[in-house]
Length: 636
Image (cartoon, rainbow, N blue to C red; front, side):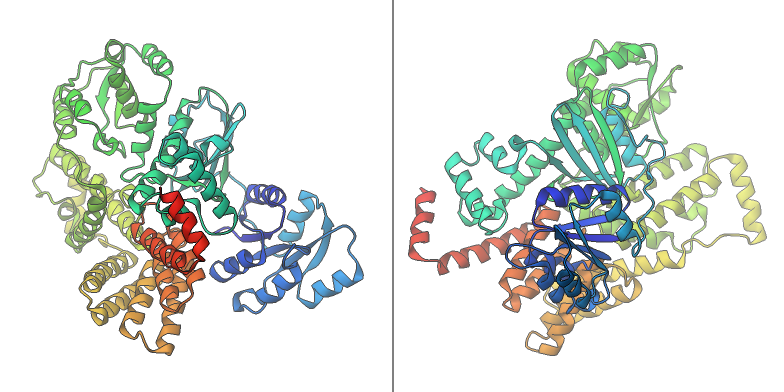
């Protein structure tokens, strides 16, 4: 994990310069612009190092530091103060009294800032985590679809910065999955999108911007409070806005890119697509990739045959083909060349190029096997995928069931094939199980589920490698005879499975209002996998529900929920549960922040949106009559 640096500065431009420079050095950077924001970050995500502007407008840096020192996690934290102009003896003395490591005059040179921080906190080495992709380059040499796909394959964590003329965008990746995007164009901000799509008129847009600048919350929740949008409409608008900004990148024919490992995008638009990440690449090609580039590439490989790629991580179903595309796949045979595709409709060329890009299909100089092509077409042309939210829950349950079935089995038992199975039967079994267990399916799940998926997938791959050929099966038979069979699942994987099973039981009991039973299950899940924040948050919430009037239990529940947020800061559920706990305690401001953060992480978090709406409605009732009349005016 990279060291975290908190930059507290009134000037957002200066803070951004510091952030970009420190992120390039391998630090994770958080920015705050006033005392309230600084203390909230210090409480929820205590940094390893803090840089504070001594002279902030409402609450100066010394006062902020004094309050931060009251927090247990920040008492020994190294802090560097920045002072505009000369550093006087009085300023230096006050800084020393609060435990600051020193005071530097501003403007401060970048290398000096890095050196001061490096004296106390070691950064992660500023190297690329994507050895197959150059850290920078041109989009003509590496087009956007290939670039996104390569970063996914290498499970990149960090930010991809792209420039095209005056346009500049930053896309954040987590474990190879694009999760948020930020643009430098005002025309691509959320409010402009709502006006352009006719969802909100200009008058309401300007009123929401005014309230947002007054500190009443994010623009989306303000529009919900104004009864301009309901929660479902806002969720859909946030999702569509983030995707529009992301897919626009696929239309860039040229430009430059730069990879920043371990960096983050602050206040970006969430890319709320579900399913396999390869779907994003294919959809971007469908929507925006220049058709001339596709045709030029097909012409350059006109004599090559289009063949199935059984070894690819992504399959055709991961691209979510339309009924029309499924019908085309069903008609494929082994004799199709890329040159023949040039005479096909535009949607066929785009879809075929997308499948090749994500490696669901490949090209070969020789014609493929007719049987393989027919089996591939039949498999890929099957019915549509179930509803996404339902599919996510089913996938988690299926993974636990699969892991339980594999426990104690040999390689044949893992693949669920008889010892008499031939190469083809083993290949088919492996392909089916690999799709079900691949970690990409569980990107949005908890860390324990992702680890369990990795363990299961590794076990399946190990079994396939041993049994894929007749020679391999013969060697494996000799190993079994000698009693040299390996452990099927490592201890850590068993604990992850036990934890996930108990967690799923706890969720069911919680829904049935059996709070004590749920508490026991969440406790066992936490005991087996203590580093999973989602388990800890649910334990804290269940503890409160069991003892709603006990102040001692309430304090313990709060600690568990806060710890859950720290351990799972990229998941929306811990923020939602902590917000509910704050709400129960009467801390409405803190609760609102947690609900807002949950929506930022996952725009589809309808529960958090509903909580925000209820809180805004209650606040509206408490407002002066004049504001009530204003609200009625905007409802007309």
